[in-house]
Length: 483
Ligand SMILES: Cc1ncc(COP(=O)(O)O)c(C=O)c1O
Image (cartoon, rainbow, N blue to C red; front, side):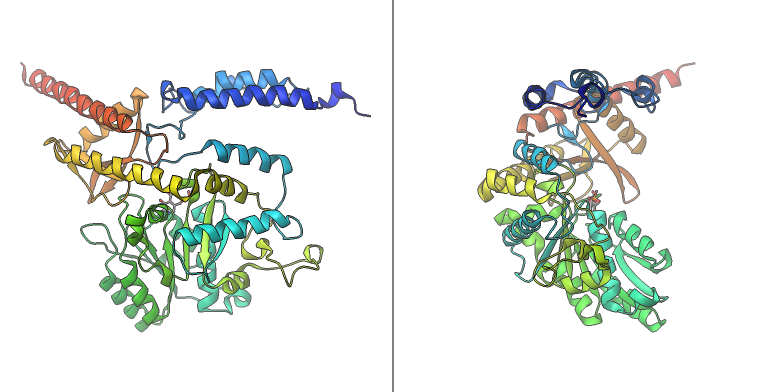
């Protein structure tokens, strides 16, 4: 029956040899990562051309597959787990979390019900309670892991809809239910509103101040005028660490308005939440304890690989009402006494994500986690001082967390070109945004291996590239002026 030539059953000793080989590659990756370009030198479709158009008919040797990973796949990857990855929000996957991922894939449990995965369910409750304590959020906050902040926010808005209008579950969304964001809120909140049927016409984007923070007085005016027009203000999303500029909305003032007008307050701390673990940064979560729900992403700030996002809510029953629908084949004897996480979201099947969080929390401890986060914040402040000291450059937003937004004074086209050159060098990767209508480079520090030398050398190469481009511009100007 067990015809190995057909099924290529991997024997334990073969698995061990292959695992050792893979583990050696992983260890070397961490050791030598700075030798690899952050951005690959590849164009759309190039990798596809090197791969067979159809899957193999017969199984292949692991050695061959691994070889192709190294020679074809790896060189075509943008290396997010690189100390000079400064784009978007820089992230880290740490060795203990990688080991946990191997174990989770090995046991391959489906954490949909307590019965289906008792330890996965309880480890999720335990690790999220540890995290809640580190964040100093109230004990009544119930936590659940989803894949991404986009899904966490989607679930939060579904709870907000249920909370405002319990009949929406049976009758559907009534017209006029309205969601309030700011001009700087991440697009995932608007996407959630779209998917849930609020409709884009019922998404209000409240204006921000000079520091890109939601203006509470404009929020209140919008709520009052919507209510006067017969609409139903439902939910406001406040952000701790906006995507473009890492600005921090005035959550206490927004919470006051939400309470006064009876709106669900969702706090998007996907990026900024982890900074609150650092004692001297605790204030970034001021007011968050008054939220109805809050999302933060350990896969952004807490050294676990993508994906792992956490939603906390003080109203788990509302979230459950919005999401639960059980079928006979999913009922268990323990339903009354255990948490079945499938009841709190649209997913049935769920990965065992809590294991990697548990490994990381135990391996680094609070002290280790805080010191790594604190170093990222220090490096961002250092970079801010270097930018302040260079008359050719200017900061484009206050540096609140570990993101530094800056621009060269020579204008948008120049800044675009400068960023493209830096990224094409492969030495570092930055991303961009537009603030106040102007093109801005974003230097996000967040990889746990990033050192002061990484930031200093990257800044030096930005300065050098800018002066080289400046000289080219001068030459072009001269050439242009010639007869
Ligand atoms: C503030 C904020 N919220 C939400 C998200 C969406 O995160 P995810 O990729 O986990 O859906 C991001 C992504 O960068 C973000 O910056």
